[in-house]
Image (tube, rainbow, N blue to C red; front, side, top):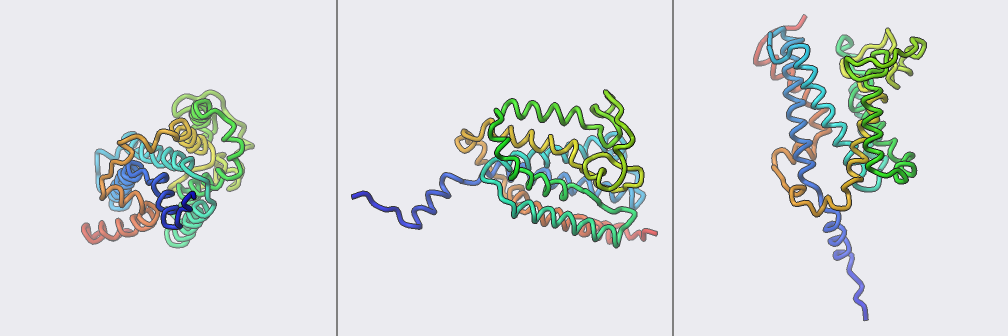
Length: 264
């Protein structure tokens, strides 16, 4: 007679086949540390008027973009690891809304509207209605196509198609009207945010990560390095959301105490 597995055995078996990929946690934790470092340096330059050569216009922009690309690609990659769940997207979106409300009320000159959390929350939620389409698309084709679209639409908030200094086509100014169009990427003249991640072009980078995961998902858990764990980084990676929410006020408080400068 065939033995019926107990509930404990079923749960144990499920855990075995869905073991956590600690390397992704460590990589996310590494990115979080750099994010904290960048924001501390930014505060020192822009709030405490300290000259830091590393934070020149070009170098600071490249540093910031490397961090953002890592977060968005990782988020998209992880979105394809299991069944999509709306709870995570709702929580991240809600945290983004809290950041917007707090900064608009208490720091209007440094307010965050359509920041990274708002974008990631919306991107996570988009996986659910689009999963029937993305599953039909060959993953290699999807990754290549999405990355091409990201490069093509990178300059949409600046008024054109193209990537950084490459302008392929100027877009009609009528597209850039209000906060609604700014959410999509067509940034109006009246819109302002110190952390701005609109739907276009960033949704294409998110789905680049999503399709990259699908390219290798069947072998991920057999790759030895995916179980590598640097515990401090892995812990930070597992708690990236609360750390993100707390690091700016705590970082500012530390700088204020260390430097003892009042901001007018």
